[in-house]
Amino acid sequence: MIALLLADGFEEIEALTPLDVLRRGGVDVKTVAVVGDDAKNGFITGAHGITVKCDFTLSCVSPEDFDSVILPGGMPGSLNLDGSPFVDEILRFVQNEGGRIAAICAAPLVLGRRNLLENKRACCYPGFENELVGADVLFDGVVTDGNITTARGMGVALDFALELLSLYKGKTVADKVASSIIKE
Image (cartoon, rainbow, N blue to C red; front, side, top):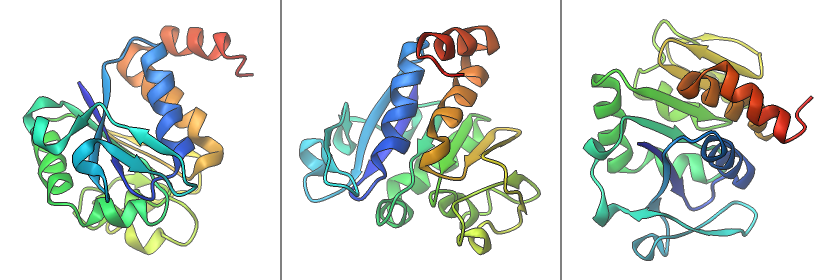
C-alpha cells in the first residue's frame, strides 16, 4: 500500500492527480493526514483552500503499513511535511525496505535534507535546487533514479502520476489510463 502524505498547505493538484491516476490504474494508495489544524479528524487544507478528508489519520497507521510513499509539494505543505516525525519514520522504513519514494515540486527538499538523494538524479521546483543535497540536479519535468522519483511542479503532475503508475503497474496499464483521460 502507498501512503500519500498530506500536510496543511499541500499543492492540491500535485496530490490529487497522482491519487486519481494511481487509483484508476488499480494501485492501492491511501491519503494520510500528517500535519494540520484538523489532522486528528483527517481533514487537511491545501495551499489554495481546498480541504481533503484523508483515508487515515496518524492514530490509525504506522510506517510499517506502507511499502511506498508520495510527498506532494506546495507551501507551506512541504515544510510541514519536513517537520513531521512521522515523515522521518516512514521515509526511513520505506527506504530500508527498498520501497519507492516520490516527491514533487518543493517536497524533494524533504528527501534532500535526509540525504536520500545522495548520488541520485533528481529535480524540484525552481529555487529549491540547493536543498537536493548530494543530488545531480536535473531540469527535466520528472526524474526517476532507482527507487526515487521527483518532479518539478504542478504543470507536470499528470506526467509524474503516469510515471508512478508505469513503475507500479507497467507501461501498458499507464498507457491505457493515459489514453482513457485523453493524455496526448
